[in-house]
Length: 218
Image 1 (cartoon, rainbow, N blue to C red):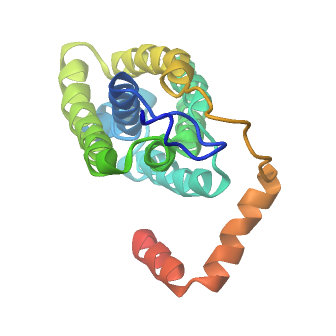
Image 2 (cartoon, rainbow, N blue to C red):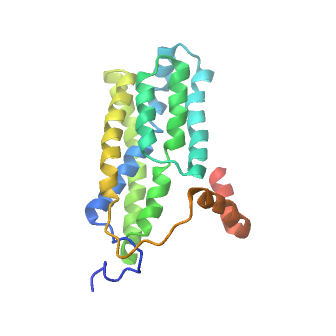
Image 3 (tube, rainbow, N blue to C red):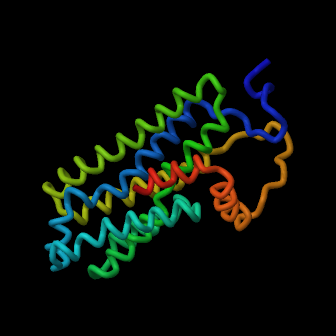
């Protein structure tokens, strides 16, 4: 019996190793978007002629929007558009707005592990989770180091031009990385509104969920 044959009705086929690696790469690229600003924030402030307190709004609003995006489950394609907005921004307000929206869409690292956990064999779950976690760490490190090096050799604008190109490639490739053949007819799923509302119902019933959420928030 193959892995696919062992699936329950309505469960998609297991991911291939190529798909697993592609999802890990996607997690790395998407995570990196929130961290490019860290080593170049001073240069960005000088470019837009704003002070230290004002430029601090960029990463702060990005992270607040990320929290909202996690709640509402918005995804990858919007990141590409937001990076384009940062590249083309004519001024600081437009740049900050695009960065904030980027945070709102930067939730793939939180969704892809859950997606992958349902599409790998049980004995591979630990290995795939570790691979995706490594992708997150790799994305953070490459973003912080790479952005600093690129800004020093060119300018901060080049950082987001490169990020836009990489993100556009990931956006185009992701549907293929997540594609799998269904083992049987897919069961009817709840609507988007019902899924969002279910978060609050689950939190009301499960104290451990509220405790975990409080830890993550802090």
